[in-house]
Image (cartoon, rainbow, N blue to C red; front, top):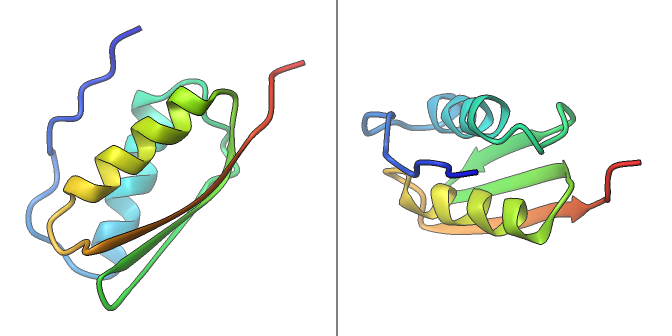
Length: 83
């Protein structure tokens, strides 16, 4: 499976960054649980939730780092293999 990291989000702030990241996770990464939460404050994007692989966790982090306005990423995604 190939996932594009192309930026679909314009320069954004606050809730727009959170929504953009959540949309990426839910629409482009089918291995991501719907239990994903993103919070943005003062340049820091926190990603929290469950994924089924370390690849998905890393991919989410790399996408987040590319978002305009994001200076730091706190990747609190946990890897839980699908049953």
